[in-house]
Image 1: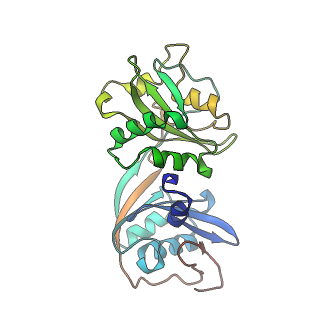
Image 2: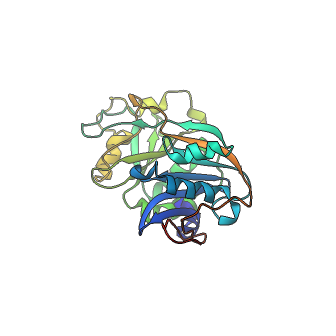
Image 3: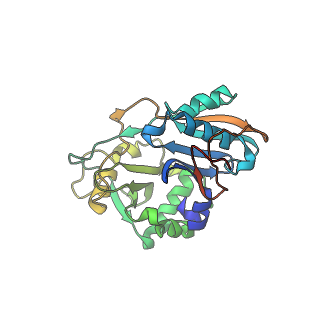
Amino acid sequence: FWQFGAEATATAVRTWSRGGRILAVGLLDSPGLLRLTMAPEAQRDEGLARQVVGDVAEPDRGVLPAGKVSVETPNGALVQDLLLEIGWNADEPWTPLRRDLTEPVKEPNMRIEVIGPEQAPAYTAVHRSSFGSPRFTDEPWHAMAAGLAYADARCLVAYDDQGSAVAEVTVWSAGPGRPGLLEPMGVHAEHRGRATGGRSASPQRPHSRGWAHRARSSAPRAPGLLPSPPTSQPASSRSLRGRTEPGTPKPSGFRFAAPGRHRRCSPTHHA
């Protein structure tokens, strides 16, 4: 999201906190889609869940607009149960694929390059083809790369035997000993169906590097979880669809701040 700049990113973030500690964070990834997560120990916190549900269901509170919208939440979170209770419907499940980088990663049979400013056109061209997103040009890439979140991140591109850029991925690090994330990852439309993703992670040429290996060697602080076919787990999050309507009763016992500021969960104050 940093491709849109720091101000746009800050405007799209929604936070809920109690006692000065953030318990839930949401990103308005599009006008009608909120990607929401919570601190693990707060996922079944009834007070927090009712505050969040009240906020997302009431368009006047500045979280989501009026009309048909979606909220992505972790499975097991009480927010899911409460949204279903008020008439929202389950939409898409999400299943993470993980890989532990403690042990060395096998070499691929494709050339993988870390992308810097001069190579940005190769990355953005593959991304546009992969996702059908013509707006992702070199300028948004440079804005993303200049953002704080990209400090420990790397963009990688895979090349075929003819030297054509065929796949791309961005690797995000959360710091030493913490999970890393591969997102987005895509294959050029003209090279789909050729097992490009598998080839980029298979052991072949000793002079090349795979997604995970190259990310670790170029960003040493990115060990942890990375998508990998061998290890999967049940869906960890789910999107729910619903309709926001004005006039939703406000949960009692909480303080709600204006849009663009922390949503504060307080046991004694009301907005």
